[in-house]
Image (cartoon, rainbow, N blue to C red):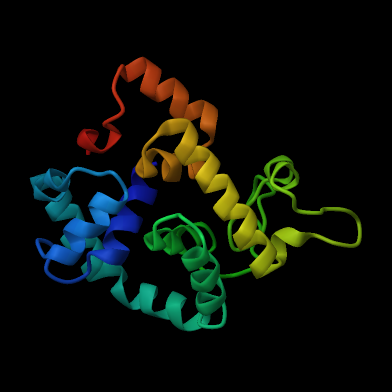
Length: 182
């Protein structure tokens, strides 16, 4: 979970970490802006950027055809546009990528979740690989998770780790401020 949060923040916070745009990104995701003032995060952030910047640029170059499609669908919805980076974190913008746990596509849908959010999967068709249909399903899923958890950052973590894991963690911690644990 921490990897996804760090990736998400690094993707959007690649310049001056204390600028207004970065603060607005955090606010859009219901994350307190004090989060970026964390010394441990600062060192992780700088190290990650130094080691992975070229890789991120390659991912963006490889996924250039999907970014406009995903962005258009996200802009039509009520989800924060920053959630575009969830697809980058999940699949590195490769619509045919398959995880060891059988998640497939740009949004790395598991079969049951994909079907739950309207994607067809059978021996001939797997709509998890369709960039537009899977993006629409991902938006519906993220909206559902946001409605359930009440915070965008929890919705993102639940998207990656699963609803049950996040719910269990929040109940066990008796708090929803997961980001303070970094």
